[in-house]
Image (tube, rainbow, N blue to C red; front, side, top):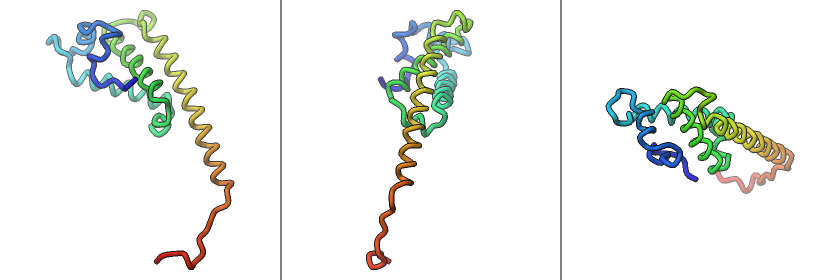
Length: 134
């Protein structure tokens, strides 16, 4: 699964006219690019928060990240349409995806820490002065 770039890619989750309604802040019947940018930015913020850092996010399974991003976006779109949290069909799934990302991030961080410890424990190989190029 790839990351979501266009709101039209979400039509399997919500009818396109409802997505446009959620993104139409000035009541023109057209999705506002600024609103879409805000939704995407908020989803990205939540991804980074779940991972703990941008660096750790880059280490996570891309499919899990892309799926979580879609759920976060859909939760935001439903909220923008006026659904309460308890009536938003994506709130529970988004929370589960966030928890999954946190677990993956913890494992990635633990693996990174183990790798660092192994590197510290190895003897360094030094070239003799005669092999140095100046």
